[in-house]
Image: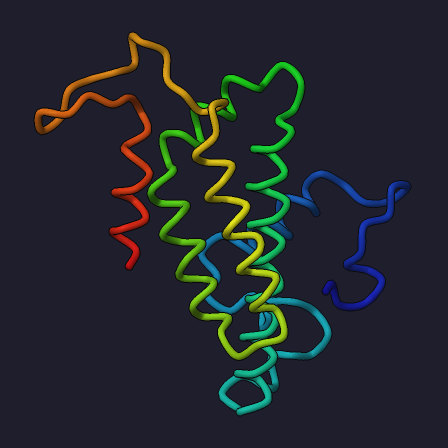
Length: 161
C-alpha cells in the first residue's frame, strides 16, 4: 500500500509523472519495493520483520499483477486492442506460465497461496482458449511439428513439472 497521503492518487493534484514514478519504484528494477515505499519500512531492511513484510508485499503485488494485468486483460481486452493483447499474450505464453507458477510456489504457506492457485488455473485456461488461436500465416514448422505463436500447451505444462 502507498505510504502517507501525499503518495496516494488525488485526481485534483496528482500527475502522470507521479504514476510513472510509482510504477518505476514499485515494479521496474526493484527487488524489494516494500522498502522503496513511503511509510518508514526502510528501517526494517535486514530484519526478520522486514523480510516478512517484503515477502507479503511482493506476494500482494504479484497476485494483483496476475489477476488484473494478465487474466483480466485476457478475459476482456480493451476495445480496439483485442488483437494486440491476443498476440502479446500468445507470444509470451510460456514465460507467463513459468513466472506465474514460480509465484505460486513462492506463495506456499501464505494466506494468498489459494488465490494464486486459482489465478494460475484461470491463466492456464485463458492461455489455452480459442481466442489465442493463430492465423494460418503465423504457423510454422518446428522440429517436425506445426504450430503458431503458441507452442503446444501440454509441452508448456510438462516443462513446469
